[in-house]
Image (cartoon, rainbow, N blue to C red):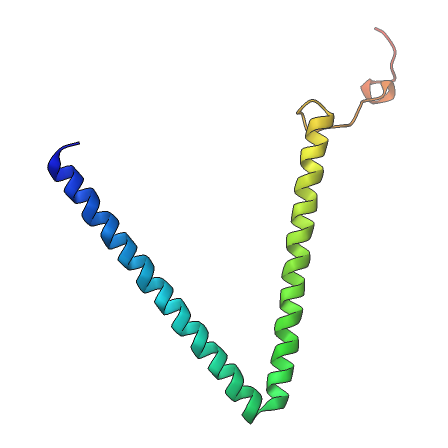
Length: 104
């Protein structure tokens, strides 16, 4: 690696680190703002806060259920793939499915 390439790599790494710090700082600011808004909502309109909290909790539970189902399905697919030698199809055809099983 030439000297200029090394310098460019160092400048890029420094800039990427700065961007990461700026993004993290913005995430923290947004989280603090969200917490403040929730606090004000709870204080000034408790009924709406309760209703929105219940709605958000239901959404979280629904998302968790979907992730769990997806993980279960993936685990079953992996298990099925292992048990059938990697074909993913565990069905064994019967003679009747091949035209009655008669030799022709």
